[in-house]
Image (cartoon, rainbow, N blue to C red):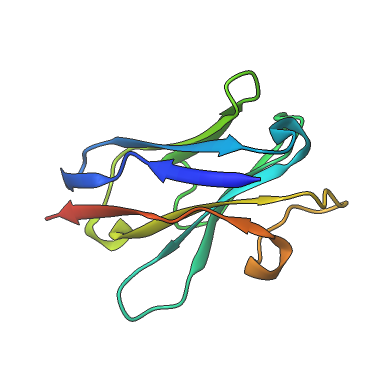
Length: 125
């Protein structure tokens, strides 16, 4: 599956953005989807994930209550709605897909076999 992330930009603290991840290729609906981010000088970190059925989600503590992950299997697209953005949310955001749907949520880089190119989110104070 090929992934294309979009929707990044510059926003003031407290503002909102919605990222999109368009998928093509294999059956999108059978993949758990995730969002990760990488701030300058830091390692890529987990943000959120949603199961292929779309009924279960899981978030990093740092974004819980502010970010919402969702998906539209008919449109082959996953989303990350980001509200109440903070300067520390500044990063390149990556979407990822995994065909492995296990008993627990996929939260590590190694669990995802497909990655998009990243979209930059900059939050000014």
